[in-house]
Image 1 (tube, rainbow, N blue to C red):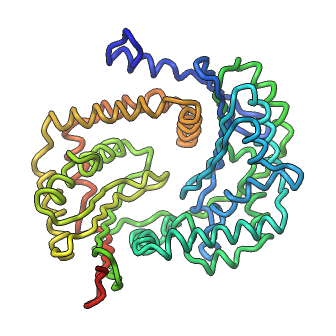
Image 2 (cartoon, helix red, strand yellow):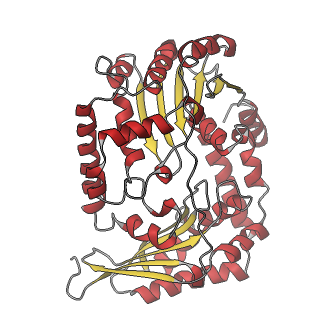
Image 3 (cartoon, rainbow, N blue to C red):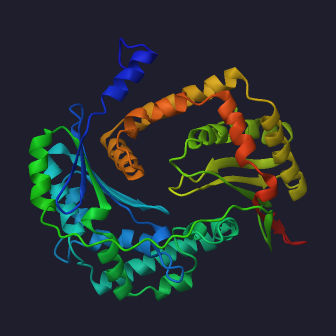
Length: 433
C-alpha cells in the first residue's frame, strides 16, 4: 500500500491509474495502449478471438497446437524466443475454450522490437512442415504426460461431454484424444491460421512508459499494412437446459476415489457471475472456507476438496471436485456436499464472512493490477468481453453483490437433480496403497 494512503484512498488511487487509449486500425485490429510511467518494463500482448470452441469436433486440439506453432511463424531466419531473451525479455502464451493469448515482456527500450515480432508473426503463414511435425509431437507428449499418465488427468475429458452434449465446450482445450492430434494436417493448420489469425479477430495491448501518440506511430507502421481476411461464420449451437441428473462411473485403480459434480452456471458477462464467484470462494477459498472446514477437517469426508467456475464466454459450469478419504464412500461424499449447499440455501452467510471474502476480492483485484503483464492481460480480457473499462469498474460489480444475491445464487444454480456426476471408483482389490 502506498505510504500515506488509507485503504479507501488506495482503492481509488489504483483504479484511477488505469488510464488507456483505444483505437481500431483500418484492417480491423483493436489497439489498446496503457501508459505506465512507473515501470521500466513494457508488455505487448495479442489476444486472438479463437479457442477450442471454434474447432471441428473431429479435429480437436488445433487451437492449442497452433499456439505452439505461432512461435515459429516468423520464418526460418527469425528465432522469436532467442530474440526476446537476448533483449532481456520473456514471452509466453496460453489457450482457453474461447481465446488464445500471447504476451511478451522486456525493458521498455525494446518495445519496438516486441511490436515488430508480433506484427511479423501475425502477418501470413511462415511455418515450416518440420516445425509443424515437431510441435505436433510435443503436444502429443503433453497429452500423454498430463492426461493419460495422471490417474485423474482425464476427468475433464469425462466430465465435459457429460455436461455439454451439444456445445463445443464439451471437449478440453488439449483435444479429445491422441488419435485426433495425430491426424491434424499441415494443410488444416494453414487454413486455421488464415481463418482465425487475422487482424480483425485480434486485440493488441501495449503497456509501458511511453506517450500514446508516439507508440501509435510504430503500431501503425508495423500492423496497419497487414491484410485482414473476413471471419468465418460461427457455427456454435446453444446448449439446452439440463433437466435431468447424469452420471458416469469409471472403474479403475485410483490412489483415492474421486467425485466430480458439474452444475450449469451463467456466462462471464451475466450479472449473476459475481455472486457465483463469491459463492465458490466462500465454499473453497482458503482453510477457513466452508468445504475445507466441514468436509475435510470436521467430518473428514474428503482429503482434498475444491469448487470453482469455468468463467467461459458462453454459459459455463460450477465444478465441485473432491478426493475421498479411504474409509468413506461416494454416497457419503455426495450427501455431505449436498448438506452443506442445502444449509447455504436456507441460511444466508454471516455478515462477518461476507465482509471477509469481500476484502479478499478487493485484495485480489489490487494484486491483479500490479505489473505490466497483468495490466496487458486484464485489458485484453476486458476488451474481449466487450468493455475495456471493465478493468476499472469490475471491483464495483463485486462490491455491489449482497448476501441475498449469494444466497439466491446457491438456490438458482446448485441443482443436484440437474447436475452431471463423474465418479472414479476403485474396482474390488484395485486400490492403490
